[in-house]
Image (cartoon, rainbow over the protein chains, first blue to last red):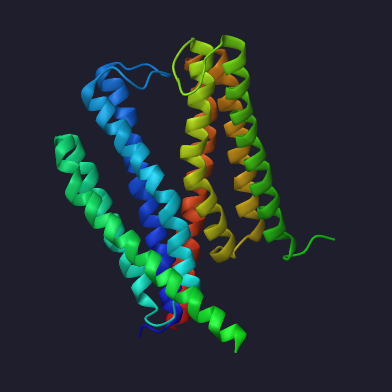
Length: 140
Length: 140
């Protein structure tokens, strides 16, 4: 049976999945380098390459917010312990939709971006909620 | 004598060293800006500057994977507690080789990249192993 101890393990699993998803965006940049002959250190020169590069950079930009909020929410949000990991999974799905859409056409990047932005916003709320509760508890 | 309590301290020391290496790549970009007169916000110009810039960016891209895996492995992988810190040290050696090689000639970046990549895969394996063990322990 699942119990509350599994919740932080779910957060750890979501972290590993998020890192693998990011790995994939990085590998794709490497693949585009050889496909289109874009030699390092250049990061411009071909549309498809530039899309793959921007996907990787945007994922990096978002991960720097996602991972701290995911683990703060894991540490402080106790109302529904599995919610943190579930929101993390939604974020990963949004990022995959973003990455695939962007490569088809940059204008198709929005749906995935919005899904992951909403998940991030929800993690911000659970984190603030959790910190406020912890603050009240230690002040009592 | 060393005991198991030293293992997370080794992880902490490795983290500080990794951040110092990253700092060094940042400072090098600043120096190259001065040397070649590349004024901010430009990130293109002479090859030596662009190589230094790509080294820093790539360090950032890799750190965002490395630090979470290092600390997840530290938290969950209990089989050989020092393996986590040791893999972290290998990663750092690889990153230094990458940074030094890249600025000499972009083609010389592969060896260091490969070494740190293998260390990252090692940390991925210890992390997954650790999470699976922890999952079985809390499910028992």
